[in-house]
Image 1 (tube, each protein chain N blue to C red):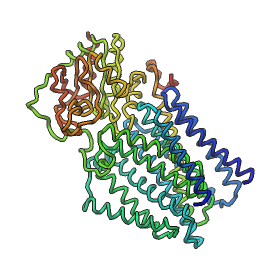
Image 2 (image 1 turned 60 degrees about the vertical axis):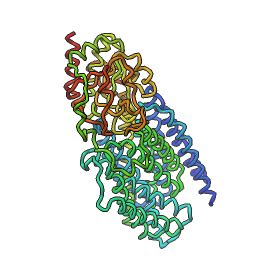
Image 3 (image 1 turned 90 degrees about the vertical axis):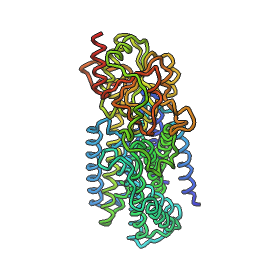
Image 4 (image 1 turned 45 degrees about the vertical axis):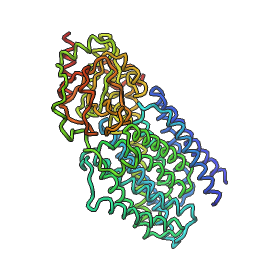
Length: 470
Length: 105
């Protein structure tokens, strides 16, 4: 290895160290921003050293330079516009879009390798290259098209409800079989460009056919899984071009996506397989079935609730996706500020799936200026409900349903927030409609529970007005 | 198996294990910025995109290199910027009124 090669490899190693340190610093909100900067510095170093390598090797043509720089300029501009403009509620779409381009980029690296070998009339490759090429192309292409469908669903371009293709599962399985057969053919070391094209097309169709039937509310799992796929595809691209930077970067993302997928599936009490088969849920949290009208609930007014909140020592707010859908984050934060000024201890109980991607609700509340020490995870906050005077549930449903503790219901075993342990419970809700699981919420019939039927945004604003006038 | 494959495979497996170890310590509160930050890291595919641009000599090669460069650059630039945008919102104390873009506490 020449001195130059050694130096280059050491820089890539330093980049990998920056990635790991960056992720490590994310273990606390106080250091997370610095972590992201460390990670970005590592990326900068990898890019700069690659520039040096490209210039040093001088195999690049002048057209190659133009392609490289114009592609980089276009991509950077698009990325910056997206990153600056995106609303925090639309974050899952943007992350999915970056999954798509990352997976697509990884697939292109391997496709290019085959195209180059084809133009040199080389039809075979060592097993290391052929196997990882096939895996990279399949995973990368599935991620690309699947993520774009997820973007469409989250953005409302494609209906959020599960869409079954004509022919349904059989067609999907047939496409999967074509992609797999082609990929296996390539893996044996025969790198045929035409077979590869068939594999790419089949994988793209498979990505679409897999994500379309998945309901909108299952998106946190889908995004996490596609994130893991993207990481894996990038790592495979690293095997193809023998780049440790790509292998390490991809493996880290694969691990991260894998952990988040598992956490989300557990929090929804569903298996990953069950979610991927799809056909579940109505998409967005809109109530599918009207609730049982005979259920007796106690209705409360804004003034009743305001008095309860203002004279409480401790209030726990339970936000759900309905809060974000109603864009009521700023209203709830303003109400919490008023209560804090009166000396009430306010915190937020956040269920892992309260949003459209892992941790989404925390970002939405942070944007509304909620200080992060008030944001509490399910395990940390559950023992605290017993000491809470009021639990204020806004836009959350199934994750507060005590029926989950019993066997034999649609949500049995699902981890829930122990809202019913609070001394008093207030639920802000538009109607008695059902949540995602389509069953009655037993919390509403609890004698401790007062139902405040209203739109979340207007309702919380009226609570603030009522608290101010006390 | 070639030496190269074995060494690449070792790097891959150990990186996955390091990833599990580091990421399982990230609090749920930061899972969105974590995913977005991890997203930026897979933008490292830009290294691959640059190398294919360097070896491209045919029209097909240039097109593939251009698209790969654009995808990867979008991933890197957008990913880091949006992660930073999210993380600067996480504050220990609320921002004083009238000041919305102050440094993180």
